[in-house]
Length: 479
Ligand SMILES: *Cc1c(COP(=O)(O)O)cnc(C)c1O
Image (cartoon, rainbow, N blue to C red; front, side, top):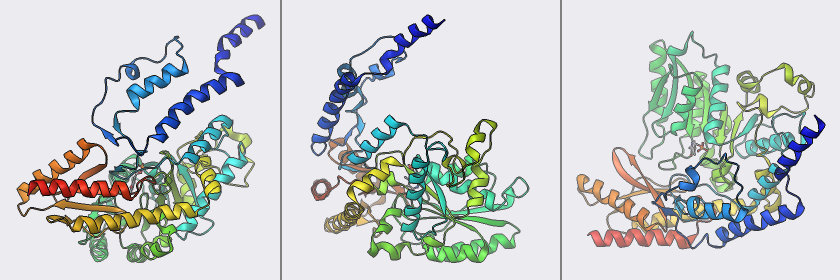
């Protein structure tokens, strides 16, 4: 028996490379990532080709061993060149992410140490770090120190955590769900409706509140709708505002909605996944006034703090509600229950075992301090303002609305709506085919629009100038 066990140990020893092997592996990986970073400001941001994907599609559960250099070569030929390059500063589509280097180093340490971040008892350090990050992010939006939350994988899961907490706090059950009304804007992120569905609330009434001409919730319309619903015997229960919509970056009137939510006793949730971190800037704080009165909120560090994908923060004031939705006691967890110094992430989210994702945020904050993050956010706002001003100088280009944050939504208007559809569609296709800068399109009020979302930490003046020049040149050729 002992011999047979030893034999298996020898066969599996490849999983524990020695120091020399680790150095060799690292060298090849660093060659790839350094090459990637050294060329990041040169290359294209979008390649519409897909490649054959042959190597990637084949079954990797094989006995064959490949050298690290051949594995890197596979990535270089099949993975890296195709589709979007979200790490590029040319990425101005959707809501860009980030990928700051020091976060990757945090991930490296997190993976090597593999601390168990789900439960305080298992890693007081990882959980203290997570809870401190949650408190400090809450502080940005004026939440009290005893608000709790979770470092989730992204905004979608963070919104889910908040909305199921609302369900518990408001007692939404099979008894009342068909009369329950949830209010949001037509420009709310689609993950909100997804969260309502996953959270078992799809039978509730989903009301899209009319918007004003800047695509913000019309607070009067919201109040009138609530009154009407009450009169009809329905149960207005949750209102969701956005602090930075995806299409236009609009911020709903947070303070007015807060007062309405208070008056009619609704759970008030703010999706600030995109816009929330702009509240770090003193001059932006007035725009976020009222967010501090919400019951729950979401901010995405993998957007507004320039981290690589994989971190969205849920904040909830009512800890009983978030615990009611997520806590669990299992026999095999009995050792963990006794230690109550800090709440455990496992009791505040759908996850038990989770990536030690606090480190990818904590380490950059410790290394850089907060000021470079603020300067970067301010640069993005200024770039958006600059882009708006320059685009407005191009005859035929019109703004969809005033940019409140760093999304510039515009279109070419030749005066003929049928023609506009084709012109703008061709313009966005041309931009994407050129591939040096990536903008995305959307539809607002039935109109085909183009949007530049400036949020990558690598987006600077040069690339914004390139986008403006490209639009100017194309518009000139068409008129
Ligand atoms: C990005 C975004 C989401 C979804 O977050 P993910 O991190 O992509 O899951 C939700 N709401 C808004 C406003 C967003 O910008």
